[in-house]
Amino acid sequence: MKENTQTALIAAVAALLGGVIAGGAGVATTIENQKGENERVERRLDEEARGTARVLFSRFFGAVNATEDVLAEGHYIRGTGPYFIAPVSASDLKLITGRLSTEEFDQVDRALRATGAFITLLHSKAGEELTRDDRETVHSLGVEIYRGRTALLAVAELPTDPQRASRHPQGASRDVEPGT
Image 1: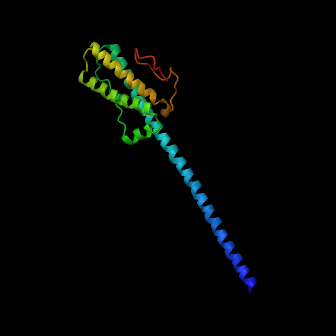
Image 2: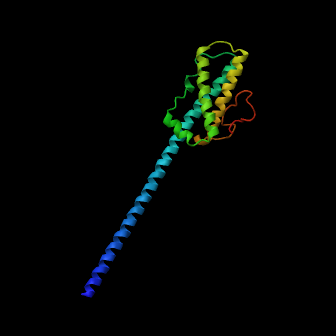
Image 3: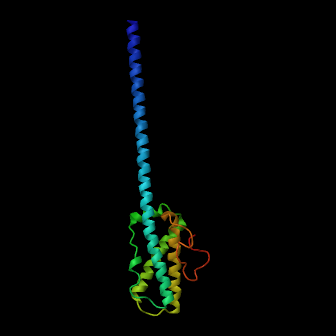
């Protein structure tokens, strides 16, 4: 009988160990599957952030060019502006801001406000000649928009080559070079 008890005990311990091993393998598989899913979600979020940053970069590109055109023409150009209006949802901005430094986010935020101010000027003063104050205002807005656009380069994964990063606002300070 002692032998039967030992056999039963060994069988019970083997079954218990088998269950622990199987459970551990199941947990390990679940953890690996979750890691893979997390990586897929993170890649998708990175792609969405990159896409949103590129759209916003493009809108800022158009706004900077429009400020330069207004300065070159010497008056507020009628019909300029609708192509660079950049409505960006709060969730899209969250995707971008999570990938920017505090300083870069501040530059993007200022660029969004400068773009809005420039659009307001275009609509309220369409066709009017620029005064000296208008020139300074449009130039300052262009520089702010340019800096915001530059802050998006890394998230947008766009080239930082000055030849490809577009024009630099006329007379902008040298602390902000194209493509930096």
